Amino acid sequence: MNILIWLWLGAIVLFGVAEVMTDGMVSIWFVVGSLAALFTCMSGWSLGGISQEGTQVLVFAIVSAAALVLSRPLVRRFMTKPNIPTNLDRVLGMVAKVTEAVDNERASGAVYVDGKTWTARSDDGSVIPAGTQVKVQKIEGVKLLVHISEKVEVRK
Image (cartoon, rainbow, N blue to C red; front, side):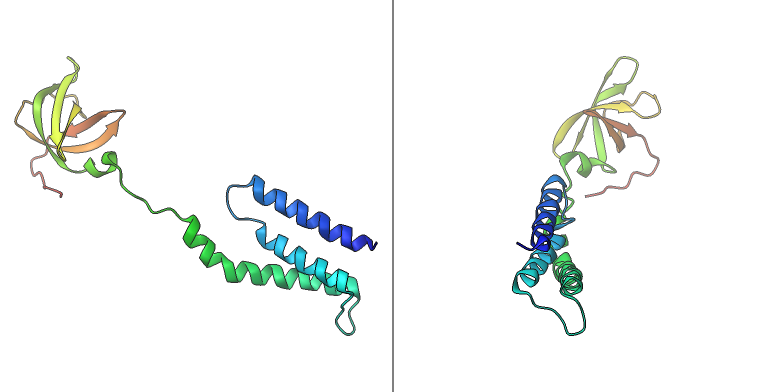
């Protein structure tokens, strides 16, 4: 049996294992190119003026590149996950109403925002009385860090 058949079979296995071991699609195109080169090797086909080995390498390169160019946009579409905001992301920048006075020293405070009551802390350490409208600055764990703003814009 021709040694080149074993070379292309090895390349298929090597690129296939590399594809399985990685998270994204990185070497599947080389598997396709290696398969085409293997069929070229087994058929004995060669381009005029180029050796059979040279033809196999050329077929490998052309088929791999074509597979990459033709399938990459499709693969990108399926591999890209849409950024869906969670409850946490949604409340950032929103206006909340203080339902329990926010006092960092006493570890107390709650705000109502987006239909839910959250534990809250002041981002600058100030005490914020109940009934005040605040803006959600960021989230630490399950607590919202809020800030009193002179001009609070309501974001829906």
